[in-house]
Amino acid sequence: MVGVVDVLDEAVRTFRSLPGANFITATLILVVAWYGSQLLIRFLGRPVARRFQRPSLTKTVLGGIRAIVMVLAASVAASQLGFKPGDILLSVTVFSAVLGLVLAPIIGSVINGLFLLADQPYEIGDMIELVDRGKRGYVEDITLRYTKIFTLENTFLVIPNSNMRDRDVINYSAEDTRSRLSLELLVTYEGDVDEARAIMERAARETQEVVEGGPDIRIGSARYPSAPVSYIKDFADHGVLLDLRYWVKDPYYMPRVQSKIQERVWSELADADVEIAYPHQHHVFDETSGTARVEVEDAERQPRPEEFDTPD
Image (tube, rainbow, N blue to C red; front, side, top):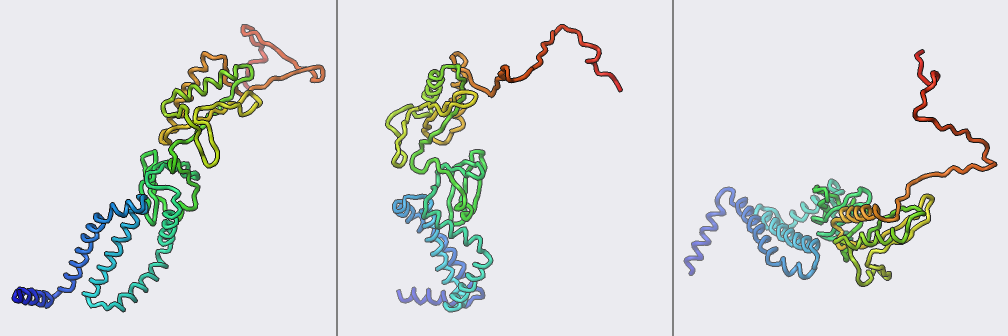
């Protein structure tokens, strides 16, 4: 056993005497640390995921563990190249100061990323909408620097977290995937308003993606009927304004659901005593209105000569 140890010790001394041995050793340390961090992430992946129960936090924690392993490995590799711990600490301090000045925007995004992870306005897999841009999509990834959104137009939006915190974001699937939509319809005063309301409610109930009924849906301290309901919203200038409010089960195909309901309403209005109102005006004349000259032309009347355009 002693002979084996002596042989190994001699081999190590021989290797160290070779030119470039320190660089090879440092490289091996980094390679081993890289693969070791991969194995460590696989080993700790499930426990960390069960502990935090959020994909974004899980990825951040595992990425931090990998970074710590690589930083320690880089320190050991630097010591193999002759750097002392004090020199390494000084170099890291100076490098951090320079990096902070040059990469201030990135550092700001990282800080905002930490706030996003703490505030939890959205999570990976949530469907969100950027109000200022009118873009809607799924959160694909959340890092310390940016948020990646996969839009419904089959494109990617990569937005720095410093910008995301300043935006108004609508989260459609944070806790309850059901979302309430509305449809306004202006019908004439002469039509059957009750029948119009019944048509709108029936069109929503017969759409598969709409919540047909059941217990009231609770939002905060308020409760709303889950079944589609049509209200008289306003007695407008040109007709009665009806407002249909209904809940969709999932927020992923809201334009399609809206289109289906409007198609059903349109088809049923054709056979109903209901007419969609449109802007129109009535001119009323009485004894105080003065005189209005009205001339009705005969379609078969021949035009007078002065009605033709004559050349200059």
